[in-house]
View 1 (tube, helix red, strand yellow):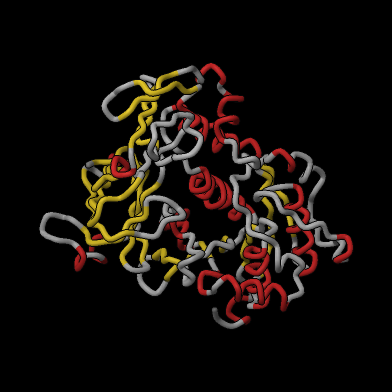
View 2 (cartoon, one colour; view 1 turned 90 degrees about the horizontal axis):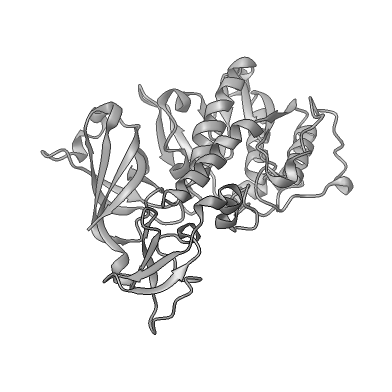
Length: 393
């Protein structure tokens, strides 16, 4: 990453979640000579309501391992804030808690609105776009930070005239999918130090630095839905949107009832409440008619999709060799965070302010879900992506 001398006058704001990844980021950047400032974003999860009150510069926090209570909830919990504070104190770096609770309401509102509209949202991508690499950039400017760093498993290539987003070296942990919405200006100010590492190496570095979070489990659930009951959160906020409706088969025959289409997502098999004598899956949600369609596994397959709210990161001249005469770009496309990219071709249609991204897969894909993001790749290069509006047979 360079010498200490070249980086001794560069300030970097590190988003510290209290986990092993962001803790190692802070340790590595300090060891390389950056002026590191740590921050924890208070987003408003239930058990973090008091976590930040009264916190300020916490460089004098206790480093006694006997006083540690490691967090095991989703990110942004009270325990996570304590873990981040402790690591910052051990590294002797300034540490601040930023109260983004009000701003985080926008993420929760989006989540609820999408479910009520019959789509399945991805709040983690939106949180990165709006807060972690949105709102946080404004704070970084206010303290004259040159960069923002995080513990994402992705890479930024600055070897050419434009910064490029790349997949993490550890493809099993790659998180470039959740960063596709970052703009080029944000990429130019983004440091992702662990993108070149595999997870076991990150844990070993944490152990080498004697960081108590070296074996802390990764967070799995959405931070504001710690019990994973998404529909219950939506119902608490908008009870009037939940009404009984019909469950129908692919021929339109009513085969059961439900208590609200928000309880379902495309591809769901368990908890449908209907037995037809063979495995069935949710194949469609109709919020207008308040119906759920169920079918067999082949009914989940679709050849293509359309997406809007496109963020395209690669200039056309960089992908000329991948583009055919009709404008189709050879790529791999990923339709959900936990699935691998699949061979496809993509095409941008329309003007830049209202572009549509069309993706056609070489082989039909299962459970293409409106509301999720689609991200296109050329090998490790992130070309761009958008938000799925519909699957196309």
